[in-house]
Length: 429
Figure 1: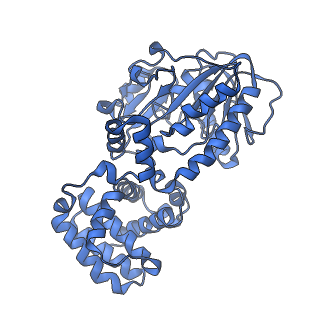
Figure 2: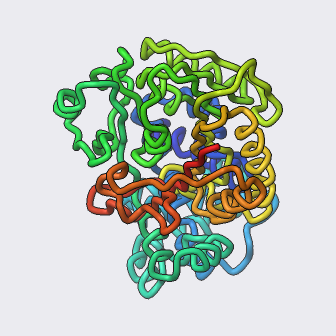
Figure 3: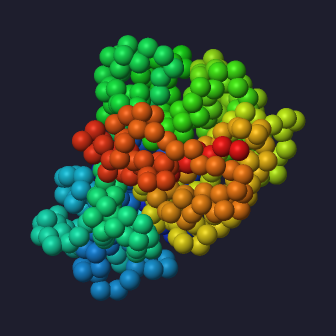
């Protein structure tokens, strides 16, 4: 058998185990796997697709496997469970030829020293290859692929219809969204992209980003359409002193610099700040870079405006990061709300009187969004909410809440490819 299909699938097994058994974020597990790095670009793309598909459909896959396996695969046999998950994903959702999916899976358990699982692996995957469609009939993909804690929190926040639409949107791959510095029409043509009402360019995912025209020159950068909104809601920042707190990897910093602001970017991670600096250099932009915990950092003077894209659960980005659904829980959200409150208090301390603060999280959890803002307003009556207007959010008027905040949901712009889920609030001191 050709070693390449086996090598790519072996990397996928290792990474899936690191993610689901050890709780490592998918991107971190991939970046640290030497076997993955040694693959050619096409095979790396396949591994990413296979892992993302497995994680997006993990609930359905588990439902099918549980009906075909009588004993749990635990301990030393845990590798076998991951092999079966990946094999099932190939057969049920990727259209991989059965001989390729089954044979490589059997080889993988054999190579792992699990010779006693060869027969089981072969039998289970051949059954799925034969009856896969039948095994999925009458299942509820939206519900199965969403952990209970997320499902119940979304039902409480948005109702069942919206929750089902959110969960269904998470089963699709996100498109490639691009923020351009200038000449949007020109770059839309060059990149074969659609121009969204908010100004973001959108093209289908695929290909190597670094090889697309304009990337190396820093003319544009990758940024979800929803992620581009917070910086825009600061308004005209020309010559203003603006802090971008929790700034890395830098998409919002680049937006603010390109808009003419004097930007101070603050982030706690030295590694991520290095990447931010590289992104700025590629675009020919400059900002003051500060590696520090923004909740403890004190600037030399206060700012005209502050953008706080706070650390959060990331549940609004499951289309791009499907591992989050299986790695996060309510306790993570509770811990993060403490950090968010601390950052909000510190950000207000850094702001000049009359200055504007935009708070954003890429989370669908109300605990991390509106509840944080409502709390800070109760405790700080001198701070006022500034409503976002329909004119500021063309094409996304439905995302403006009754209070005047912004709540994007993954099923919005469904006909255009959807959006990340963001909560955004604008305050004035």
